[in-house]
Length: 585
Ligand SMILES: [Zn+2]
Figure 1 (cartoon, rainbow, N blue to C red):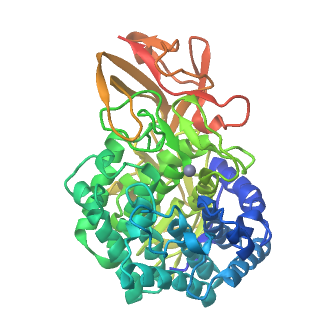
Figure 2 (figure 1 turned 180 degrees about the horizontal axis):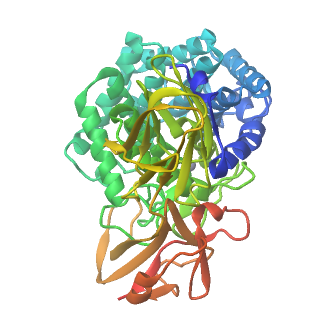
């Protein structure tokens, strides 16, 4: 796939367009301004010798990936030059054996560890994020040397994990998922250059997902077990493994892998996703692991890295199945979890978003600040996809698009309106053509209605997409109306919890009822800090909870105002938030 041709043809407007623009002007253009930036200098021989190592080397690969998408999307020569200068500097530092990381020679992943030293931190993670970044640079610049460099990173992994037979799971933490998650970038490389060595590495990662003691990722998920029972349940790393497993299925076709991914996805959607669309933990003391399915409490914590990787998993499953339920999850996460975690300057992010509680900010070296950057740049990639003579609209948003269909013909249109702030959007065709427009039914909307040039039309449903096939004429206007009423989302808390990595819960002895509110795709928050296990003064009676209506994108509870999460950016005023309101039955 040439991502350049897809990206140059979609311009996103509205709320998401603003986020894409500020992300580009902010983190992408400023955090790495050129080869001399600190995130790149970390890879110099001088810095390596200092032995600092550490996971912060991941930012270089993440930036190469995001900046490649920016370049593909804008065609801007400045970012293009910045991208190749940075990539060229990194290539100069790639060693003869293929190593392209920031660890001192005695600390590297390929040095056989003693029995006591089972892992060497984040070295493989960093090398494979670099590999992913270089694959993206190669795609957007069309220059093979970047793909050659990515392949040399894989060569060293092959030598280490296949020839020398070291365990990839032993190269990183979190039950080995830091190592086995390499499957995701390795699939990116295999898609571009399918060599037997890269295939062997993909298979080795997947094998170790099950042979590593206590992990059992494919095996346990195939049996339908809760994601909280896989390894140490670390969210971000597990999601990277799942995205890789889905991509490996699409490349190599092993059905068990897809089954495991779909079961994992179902477990997450049923029990581990906040109404904002963020995979959550943090009710048990650790912030970053899936809690057991019975663990609901209003103080859920989502790491922004997990939102980014959750979106990648949904996109991978959408590409494989063509089912709109994955697009619906993308919409929910983009408009809520992602927008709620970003500062409007495009530079700063929230590390930990709490449904009720204080946000954790982090700093420019926090993993989440680069993951947020990637997730926003990826939005353009999610909006529209094509297959055959069909254009799939996965996330509704004001935008313009000129897409090339399989038969070489063009689908050209713009989407007008104020979505997601109103339940109506219009597709205006800008060039005649014969194709099908397939609109993903959002997860929150039952009945959608359609008008073509003012007259009602019926759409045919397929895999959750509402499809309208037509010989379009320039100026045709298809208006989609969605039921934009107030929605209540309710949960019950029955258990209290304690422990760090393990699981320990006891029955509260009573049931606590909570509600939050949404309207269309938007979920609502207040600028208010609820404290763990203190009585929540924001409460409603059952009658009040059922009568509450959102008007003009506002409502109040005991004088505290709630607004859409996407209109409550952090770093402006306080970072206190409340989503869940207690209901006294
Ligand atoms: Zn993070």
